[in-house]
Image (cartoon, rainbow, N blue to C red):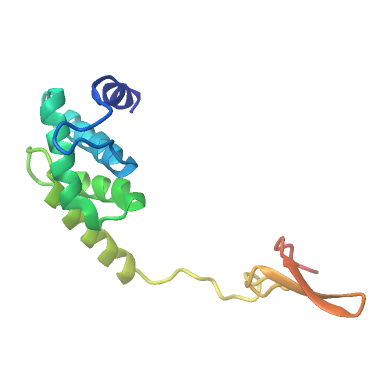
Length: 146
């Protein structure tokens, strides 16, 4: 991961030659994803011009994937690929949709036994108590009362 960051720092120009603007943090994440996918597939690293063009092309395709989900979608795509070819941006988008479907299909794992529920806040996270005759609330530290 450190090598990927060093490559980005070495070859990233302040503005992209294609759009003449500074890269966003989303595009930086996409660049790291491209480098990692190429390295994982034993492909050579792109030259800086090709790399910048690839980042902008991937960023256009990946614009509907939230930035905080890029890493999970990338890993899902890498784990579920069945060929020796490098993954592409459409593979990451497809993996994101599969990841969302898998998350929504899995049942919620909540333990509703009497011991699992905090006796102070009843699982709400805020404990209601009376202080000097006034009802007030504070964050609960989830210590069960015995």
